[in-house]
Length: 353
Image (cartoon, rainbow, N blue to C red; front, side, top):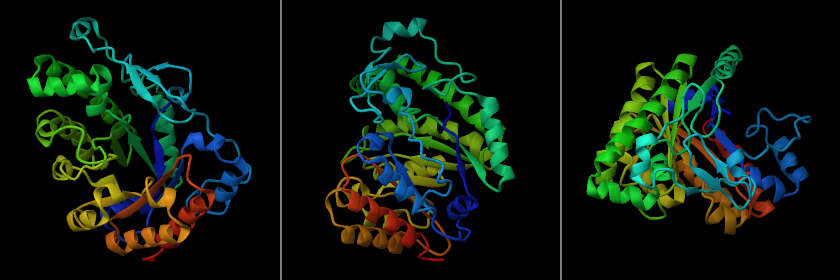
């Protein structure tokens, strides 16, 4: 399994402020949706929105299989030795067993081999290189990605969240050793993607809560920001665009993320505030806006959904670029709202065209 995806020239133009033909938009259907909604309805949605699903064909009607760590009732041990559990097929669960919750286990700890694993499962680098070369032959580009949760979250998976925060507060010396292990692994993954010819490198992990970050800005600058800078440096040196993702309220960390070398940042709209995003980020880097999944799209009307997406495009977009949009569909959203989201994303993607 790999986290490589294919991106278009418009995506590169949007990030570089080079006047894309339209705002790059993604409508991602979480695998759990395929057993919470009628399958035919989802396939119909895809067939009717080819700007959002450009690779969909009438023959392509096989729902995706959940990843091994997304299978209910089947605990999964990843390449680091962390045990994952979920209660719903398709929904990534949480780590329930932390292999380094006791520092004594560090003495005999062996990290995964980046030649064979991406941290979550086995990886085939020859296949990835072929995939990127094929994309280039079709006028598209390959984008590599670290595992979601490659730095701060990986440390929390290994130690446990509370243990990790106490380690930072106490200045635990062994934490530095563990950070070096985690960073070295991810650095090798980044370098391999760069060597394969990736045009963009993704650095996804969640740093925010509903209000404020999951760690203090001081601890972020001390322990995590240097890791980000080291991991982004090979991509920047090779001219590979740097894309960072985080859910939650990350307003207190954004400036540090930008100075780490980020070209595009995927952040949530209403959690961080559309006005705040416009005032603090517009024009500084590309905003890859994560459309609300908590309030309006779940509980609002189709008219409110259209108004929200129109407002976001008007406030954050420009003919030069600098805006992308993504919506992640999860179970619970009324079907009329699902269609309204897709309709609005396609309608306003061409707002500046």
